[in-house]
Length: 440
Ligand code: GUN
Ligand code: ZN
View 1 (cartoon, rainbow, N blue to C red):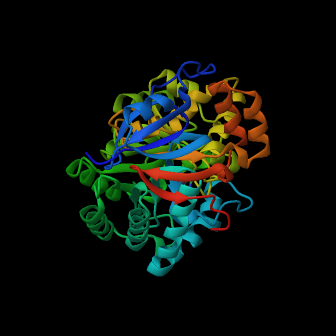
View 2: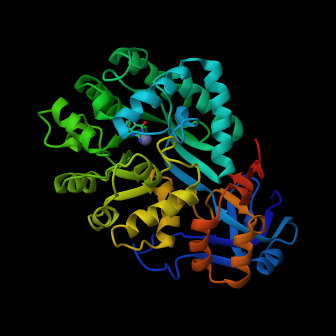
């Protein structure tokens, strides 16, 4: 048997979904002086105390990370590739922001060279923040999705990627007719979907406003024909958007019904936002097992509203967390978790930090049907992890010197951690980032 590698440090993971509120005591599991044993194919052989690992694997290569934290890599369930340089664009709510900033920025991604350079920078931002799996929207152009897939493959990150589909209510250069959009999606699926078990395609009707019935129906047919392909879109983010959907689809019972009628809902569909759902929509999300990607920094930045997490959780709606860069203001899943906590505080709910961490790791993976593959440190899972050095932040190291409880440390990190702490990142046991990525 090829030699195992031991990564020895302080480990935590949240392998089971904690209750919505409470400190999460008992759910943040790991070892203060622990580690992972990883085989040559990148699978986890053991997650245990450091001394026990050394005894069990006497011939293993040892990577001593004493004093460092070893955590699962993060899952960003919703992010826009062409928007990486849009963060912090002043002034408007969703529809105005799309028109003024987003669409002009996305138009540049028709150029394969620009998309390739941006692809590499985008993947650097993901990895520098400890994110090892992202579900990303490219621009409408096939070349932009190709560029992002290629960058992810080259750098070893996991991703779901889709070119957005738009055939109205957007500048002409960003719309495509149904046949051209179908051909581009078919080509992307053929080349990339399932590649290396790490890269997957998503049909990505941007939102109901920018797609005709015909386009949605064709994408729904493609989703039925290729049932392993993901579907991603936006839903009920903003009141003016919801009013526009009601105007454009008078036959639909509600916004979600537009997607339902097209056959676009189900366990492999991830919808961003769902801030203003009706009761009927909540029920339909739950019964179709559709996932909602909560993107709190974006919801606050654009002033879209406060996500009804308690209501959706009570109804059994599946959830994940996303940054939604560039409506979202950070690539950091720590910032995203902190923002999710604050959004719930404004509604008198104190969300468990362990629940948020679960959503940012294994829960996020489970939202894409990959919860048995990565996101936690169970034997047989693939070793996706990030190594954090608490000493790189004065406040984190001071806090950790007096706080030893894992749940309390985790909660402090939600508000104190950032990309400075990330020392290295591994996907499937292979190092994909050596940090910190200062100035990269
Ligand atoms: N709805 C449709 N497109 C977008 C987008 O790019 N960002 C956000 N936040 N919402 C959208
Ligand atoms: Zn979005």
